[in-house]
Image 1 (cartoon, helix red, strand yellow):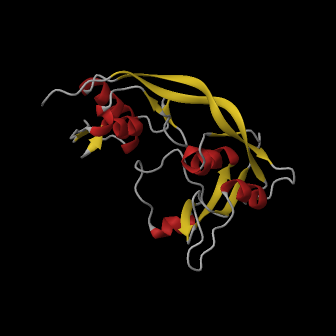
Image 2 (cartoon, one colour; image 1 turned 90 degrees about the horizontal axis):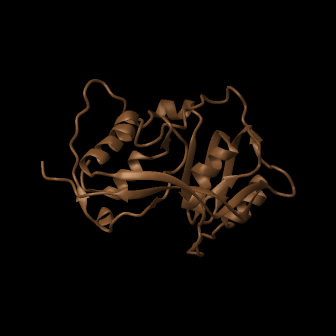
Length: 230
């Protein structure tokens, strides 16, 4: 790893990893720590003994390196914060249920940078989940995905301004097709922005985001030190 801030190393080390398994979604927000963990950058050269998976090296082993070389001490805590509750809109769901056999399910607990990029043949065969830009809009296409996974991967605080909590209590898998305009999109040339994410969810998928209070897990830095010279 080259030219990497300590905060980014912490985010990567705890990227959806808890209780011995990888989770879907974003790493918990990080609280505390001195200002230099955002500005100072480091190069890390480390070699694992034996054959180790990328998941192990970028997760538990990176955590161990941070604890050893940076004297990182960190704990998790849950706080009540403003969230959006994902619910079913008044008109009911407008989602297409996933058809078994239509594509090969993938392990969504393994995502970049932990697994190699798929080949074109694998992309065609595997159930896909991607967001692309079309003009001023964002187009989301995903197969074989639950509402909880959809809320964590495509909605959470990187799309809207607060975490999203799935309150639908629906465990089925669906195929998702959604087009919306990100905040700040304005008409340009021949392109017109689509609906907001809130309107698009209700009109296209039959889902609704409602302001609420809910639990959010945080990584809190108790102590961290600059590493000694090699």
